[in-house]
Length: 476
Image 1 (spheres, helix red, strand yellow):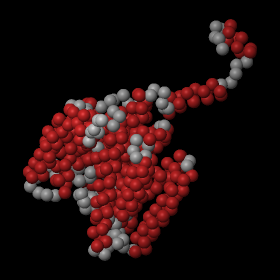
Image 2 (tube, rainbow, N blue to C red):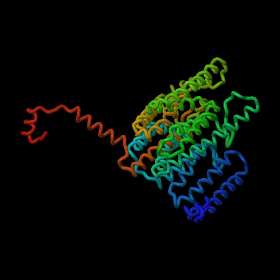
Image 3 (cartoon, rainbow, N blue to C red):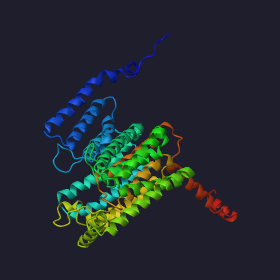
Image 4 (tube, helix red, strand yellow):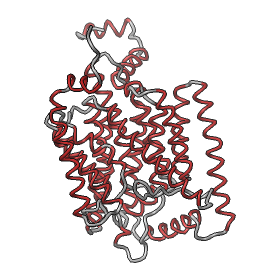
């Protein structure tokens, strides 16, 4: 009678090559993390994060020989990290660095047979980039030019990275990594909240301090995106339904603790649109049950801030900023003052707290037109994608533009994450179509439907006209 193999023996039998090299790349990764952490000569949270990210990239580099997109996969959870890179002076975030590395890998090693929806999204972003190129020319300063490339990377770069991962059949792993990072965010939020409660602060907003300090809106929006992933739980991702239900409520609870109003509004809108399109009564009731108290709490908090007459709270501060930005925009209405103008402007040294206001002040009416074309086009394209793949992409992107109506827009993590997820969805759709050519495709269905409608609406040719055409050599 054969004796069952234990888990270690099964792992060795299933992947002998991986097991043989496991100790090598694990040791290398730990060495890189330790060396980076010690050489920085300080123990700040961002430096520890940098060490961990570099260790992950080393693991990906070692695995790239057998798995071409390993670096991009290892960089996926780092794309939602807003901490600063400790070894680079200035404002470079871990998210930007990880996205740049993953983009290079995706371009060199990823599949580039982009589907029609993917090409449409890239062209829409190119329209916005062209519109903002004028302000780069008119306002020549370094931050303006750098941000022009940075904005392209946050949208098109994230799309390409997500596409390469999904097209390679790694969508499940990528989404799992994002959800695990969101679980870390949720734990950090809970730990910070417990600390506040122990000090008697039971109703204040939670700014997570573990595993690194971050703003409540940064943590809240990331938790909202991942809560929507857990709620939709697309079948092609093959994620456990039981775990996803638990993850959804954990992420929602952590988001509520942060009191990030824009994150809550974005999630509620995405859930309502998703449930209305699905048409399931139980889903609609759940969305309404979440929406009503969520909207009530948001409205109530705004009313309380207005009635407090505190000129330094977030509501009054935003109103003052909007008035200042409007007065500033009137001096350069067509091309604006340049991207990231607040880095160099002597008085307007703050980022406008609303998406369209930020764009019109930075790139003028020309840039605002390009921004509107990009976002309206993106929403339309993703809405028309097969809902099995498109609703997750549509929901997170819609949540982002809704969030941006109440706070900053061009923030690294909060822009790149939804487009990364959208790219993963489109890549996963192309991967399935490559394996099953008969799979449903909206674009082909749309062409067939239009051709059939034209045939139905075509007026019949009379017998007299048919005889005349026949004499001319034209057969009807």
